[in-house]
Length: 203
Ligand SMILES: Cc1cc2nc3c(=O)[nH]c(=O)nc-3n(C[C@H](O)[C@H](O)[C@H](O)COP(=O)(O)O)c2cc1C
Image 1 (cartoon, rainbow, N blue to C red):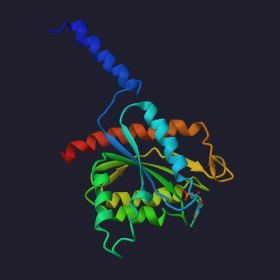
Image 2 (cartoon, rainbow, N blue to C red; image 1 turned 90 degrees about the vertical axis):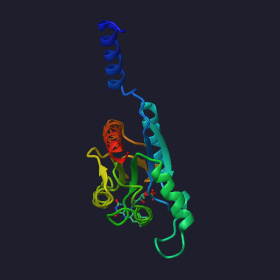
Image 3 (spheres, helix red, strand yellow; image 1 turned 60 degrees about the vertical axis):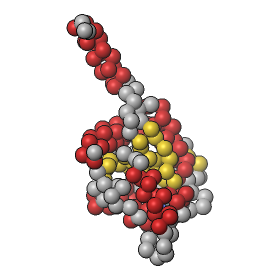
Image 4 (cartoon, rainbow, N blue to C red; image 1 turned 90 degrees about the horizontal axis):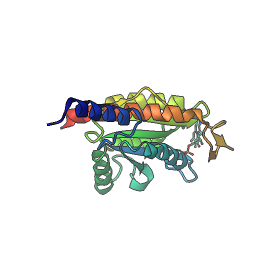
């Protein structure tokens, strides 16, 4: 039987660890690389987000590269093998962080195609968006929010938006400004909270 002092001390420790961001959940969060072209900068951005996320020590974060799944254009050829691998990966995840390049004021065709290749595996999960472009990839990010609504993915409000002019050297070497760290952590706070909450309705 614990004394009242022990119960209070235990609660304080739990509160402190949570406040310090060290509370380890069993959530699996996929950091989805949404551009697939040769010479893309997307992996640099994804690795940076993963580095920030891993330091928090509060979930299992992994890079999920759309390019690895070699998805053909949806419906053009039999792609059951690729679709199976893609859906299995998504099914293993509780939440997502989309790394979004802006192409012609929207998301890349490869990301839209990858979104179309699954339905149930997206449903009732949470997502954050990290975008980049001449105006922070804002137009692509807003398009993505509309698509996620249809897939029953709850996209969080905090949105790190990176500038091709000030967060990259020559548009190709990623050197993010310090202020984005706060936003990435704020976005991850929301993704974890909502991923945990939504997991309860999938069980
Ligand atoms: C087909 C294409 C269209 C683009 N359209 C836009 C655009 O509308 N707005 C923008 O800010 N940047 C645009 N860009 C610039 C990209 O944001 C920039 O090249 C970025 O590095 C692309 O991400 P990635 O290197 O990961 O593919 C475009 C790039 C490509 C290849």
